[in-house]
Length: 194
Image (cartoon, rainbow, N blue to C red):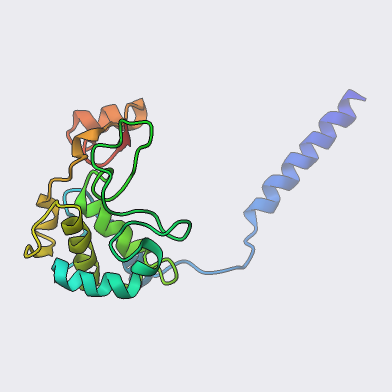
């Protein structure tokens, strides 16, 4: 009886391993150009930001056309379609925190990256770099973080100091935070909310 169970287990294991070695014949490896199109990571330092620029005035036009239907005409939110984007500063430590661009996000570059990748909801990734800089400038201005006439681009955006920049702490997991923090690289890249 014991040998039959071991034989059955061995056959099952062999069959499982053998099945995994065969290709399903679906898809193909991505080529270098396709990989380049997907390599759109933007770091807090600004590394990865593309050329382009935008102001709050330009962003208001794009925002009204592409964002206001979900997030409200002034970023006040339109639940359940879109969250509030403006206000909430000072609310994170209360019983009713309001997480917005101005109160929660630690880096302006992360705001740009999220808008560029995921917005608008019905056409994610469809905004040009200029439109993304402009919408980011509009939201930063509405949250009283930058002046209306400031131009946002790959040089100026990383210099914007967000109100909650110090509200995040380095990731304490030993395999991520410590080794990265000791080299000075992880502080800005791997963080978690307090």
